[in-house]
Image 1 (cartoon, helix red, strand yellow):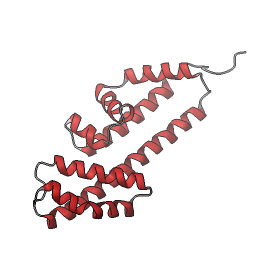
Image 2 (tube, helix red, strand yellow; image 1 turned 90 degrees about the vertical axis):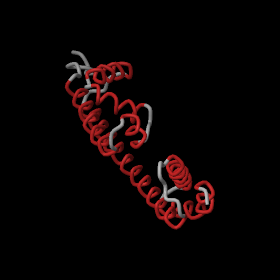
Image 3 (cartoon, rainbow, N blue to C red; image 1 turned 45 degrees about the vertical axis):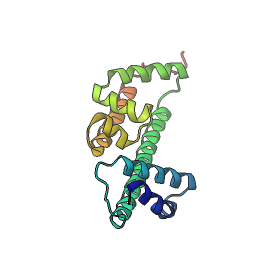
Image 4 (tube, helix red, strand yellow; image 1 turned 180 degrees about the horizontal axis):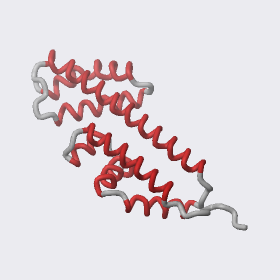
Length: 167
């Protein structure tokens, strides 16, 4: 049986499994779509349906946990950024944009690249890994270091007295 036909046969089970591990229906639908896409692009997916079924379930599971990790990292990053903003005098939106762009420009090229792909362009870790031709774990660690470096630069490069009342 062709891969496409096998996936069609397994589709209800994939949807049911995704629904069981996701909080929202739309997340489950996206997860199934990502897993099917991965299966269709795989160089050597299992040929027999009894091997393909658990393989696709693992793909679903891994994609789901990758997404949860990505959300956790983004949440931690956002919380750190909020803390930084709360600890510093408030500045205008334009000033913040300029300072952020200046800090971004000071990052090493590898940091800029991974931040651009994941945080600015919204690529998934695996997509960024494919673009950069590195393992997904390396993307995650580079991204973590790049975000930390960016926050350090934003904290260090703030002009003294920015946003503070004069006088």
